Image (cartoon, rainbow over all chains, first blue to last red):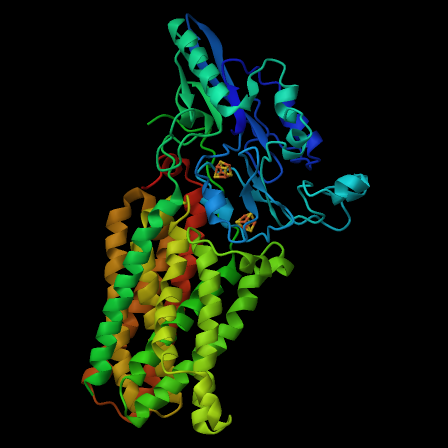
Length: 281
Length: 307
Ligand code: SF4
Ligand code: SF4
């Protein structure tokens, strides 16, 4: 059994309660006060310290002299992939699949090599910058003692490690729903057993399609490229690219055999040439 | 193809800077020297034996320098040893770290053998480094020369993924030509001229092999290759790696093969050719990493990831 998220774009009202709840529960630092100019999306992307990101797809259409806006929002998150690139890449074993079937980074094991960052086909995980000692960026003094000690504290005192959604490992262990799902006022984010969520999503997408909505599931089934189904999957209207979800993700480790073979071939050829040159006087 | 999300990048680029580039460069040469010490050792002339010794010393020196450079790029350097708590076949970085440890062991043992043979260390110590460690160092060296290419192509970065065969093969060639260049530089400075010709012949083959692979990669990659082959980055790559780092030293090395230059002039020629090759090899690694950053920022390439 694995737990996961079903995030439904047709129910999202773009309130960003999930983003705020996540930041607050996980004691993650601010993204700074930046206006992107891209609709209402000033968060812009997931990062080492931003684990939910509401994408705003705002389309302007002109109909009979009036300009109307068509909106679609969806809350992006780590996909907790069946075959997770980050999990395979991590050389320290910091990234594990925990007892809930979620991909979790142990912040006290990670040494900040950054390999998971380039491995993730969804651009989710990132390194958390070092926290400056004055605590201007993030006031460590405000942390409760027990939280500072806690393994789940994402910043691990001074950053320099990789960060991404933990699927609220700590809350799940205490029998609570993840903060984002709890805060979502429209049930756009649903948390639960993945198989059950998939069933629910299939019914939902059929209902919508019957009503003539251009709805489809992303990641409920195998996304291809060797990744398999996603344990955090989405119901979208329109194409995945428009929400910054890759239409053709690939599990990078599938390329390794080719790489080693090509490297070995080159080395063999050069060694043969080398032996001929040196033995040949 | 549909519009992407406000043209924002889909992927996160590498956080790797000049310390990683330096490691890729020096580590490659270190591995290449592992090959050279075996190849040279197959010939029993005094000059070749001297070359074998020089290659072993140089390679071991690099094995000492590389780990600190590698560690310096970590977000939490004090946790470097966490990489040695686990071995993962599916992670080239994990395999590479263990490869580095094994290589350092083999290279160190072979240096010990040289020193024991020479009389600097007690003679019995040569038995601590059995003969088999000679080919072992070559095999591990070949792995070290190429695994960094596999490491970067086993990522989501479109340019690197597209080069899943080209980048590892070109890395091996670049490592080999760099190792030849360093060896001929050392041999020339040490007055060991006979082996220089041979090294330069091998260097030419490796360099031309690299050139062929890079040319093929360019056509194979198409628009995904733009960050490496076009624009300012592409110009730097073309000028330093291809023209100054491959073509120019190959011409110089060719001159050395066919024209009988007076010794001092010939020495200058070798020094020049070697320096150019080494500089080109550095820019090759730098270009790969920096172009990877640009590639990560291209959402069009990132949405349809190479197989
Ligand atoms: S989405 Fe990325 S970070 Fe999340 S589990 Fe998959 S590979 Fe890892
Ligand atoms: S940055 Fe940390 S979690 Fe990511 S691969 Fe490196 S050690 Fe593993």
